[in-house]
Image 1: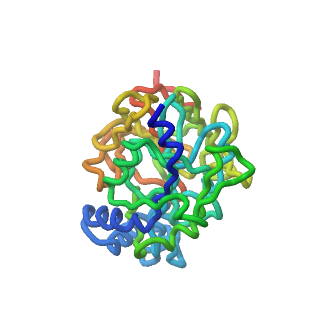
Image 2: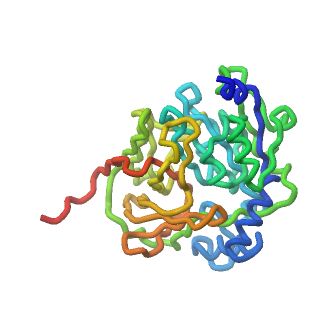
Image 3: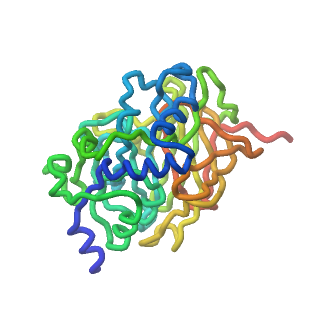
Length: 344
């Protein structure tokens, strides 16, 4: 009880200025500086031509160089029913969905190529978050989780000190009413540095090469996410517990790619303090272009992005666009709809 009360009384935000160190370390681990990270992003996709910049976290054209001129801002977002619809998630480059206590889920939304007017509701960090290891905006957390995130190469700013970048929406009840203004957080960076690419991307017109499917259903315990292929939108229409997921402005959530990483949670999925193990290896499913590939994921250390491979061990590239990453417990039965029947 003491820990929970303390968590509610401390609201903080990690701003992207704290990110620069993290990105520099990641870039160095990948073999270069932040400039090299930009080059890596350009080499992963031919979408915008061999010498034109692309956004590192989407593989989409970045003709004005916006994505390459600033770090990534990651915001921990509530997924409680009272927090829906969330604001800004439709504009995130990458969104991670992790299991927290009670087997509910929360999002970690990454912004780089786009900056919505407001993002939220912002909630507290969990032990999994340092492993995702990108810049954060978050609302407090139990002392142990806050201490862990401070071990990462980031710096946090008190919610009050972060005003007006952080604000409370009086039309919503606490704790589902804390929001962040990304445009006011980006300038707090000590310097500009683009993030490394998290994934590799297919070139123009390239086929994904998977099996055709119509939908995937992911049970988390206290709720179920479903991604249904929408050919007209060129993405996967998301719903949660049967309700379509949309942004507060009505924009439906339809990511181009869905990456399912089956992970173990130290302490047990849904237990307070549980932590997704994101260093190591495990099974992975990747959805793109109305198809899916079953393969694996691996990650050697915290400074290295996850590597995706097919069942033959060959690298898997995504279609340029926004990506949602699901982190179900390893062994979870995920249902695939519309896949061809196996040969007799």
